[in-house]
Image 1: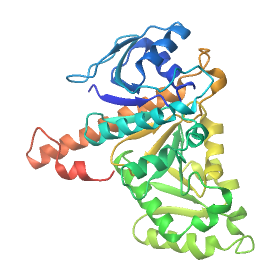
Image 2: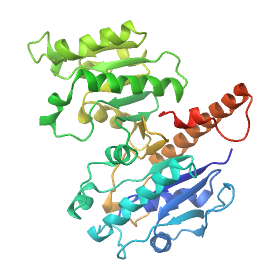
Image 3: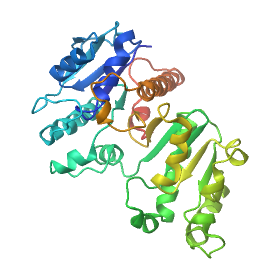
Length: 350
């Protein structure tokens, strides 16, 4: 099944455009559509000495020939130089996301793959922006999403994402954790075909609070919630101390980990699989994956950036989209329908 996949290269002065151009040199079984400035891509391809043929998005999705890329134009305000971000181009970075979101919501694209962005440049341009995850949730009016990074042998989801550390503890509420765990459970079942996923839950405090001596969030919030959900059929273990949870003793029997905050869970995952990991946003009305790294401005335009994470993000998005399409077709067959996807399937927020 050839899919039409939207790709936003991210910060135009970073390595996002380089990675996409490098990847398409061997072609693609899916139609990758760059939502970007065509002139910027042509200039970058020339700088890197890479082939590039841009084609319009029309008809049914078609595989890419070597050096070929589909394009939905999104013009930059000023010419970009590798390694030198310009605040004038920040609105175009946001516009590319908006175009991708619209295309995914109206089913023109089967999934969205995002390249790395520079949040500081966007904020310096006067556009409040805390990250892809939060922006996608706001633009799709999704009340709660969950950020999950995955690499071979490890999946780590986050209860909170881009918050200052001083704001994490007040944000950890029973309501937040229950929503996160329900989304994580549902997505592991539906997208990853895990019928009863085993989820490890980190404590918030050192030693998971050490019986209240190092904090009471585990006693007052986390433990009661885990008992409640386990009684409803969940398979949750915790709260576990984060300094010992990420060991074979626990991970060998687990399908995913829920960490309480960004830097509690992601350092371990990135140590294990940096450059070979994918960021997946759970809970959106469409599939979104992303690279696990930043813009690497110092590597932009050099041809030295590694494509592993972007390749993994594209492969993961395609696999999830194919599984979802297969589920929809099976649902049609069960309902005795053909042609369009069941409205119930399309409306479901998974």
